[in-house]
Image (cartoon, rainbow, N blue to C red; front, side, top):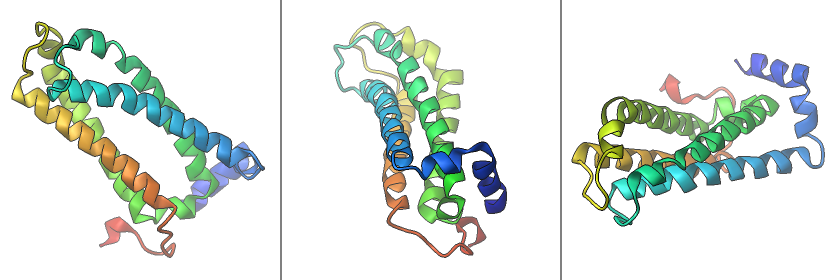
Length: 169
């Protein structure tokens, strides 16, 4: 896996770009901007579902979630650039593995929310308490994104030997 990702980074020119003076800092800045868009919209929506800012219309707030999707797409692209630039730092890193797990749980939570709960939540009248299932989904979402940020920050502080992997335990 590491060899494949490394070859992908080298063959596409991403590795060369990321190892220029401004490559890594520029992509890292874009990664943080994407994270800000994601959490600034999705996080705010989740907080509203949990009861913070009951005066804010849920449907109006939900319209901002498209900005969060744009932020997520930006993060996927920039995260991929990090991954193929130094796959050994990420693939065997338990902080990265836990970050990916938190993103998977957030994605599954999102699918459940939009398939079962979103239509009734968007139709709620102004300033009402959201059903408990939607509040639970919002709490799971917030906790997952906090975990993504926390584990993402820990990636640079924990660089394990490249032979160790989380799923091998």
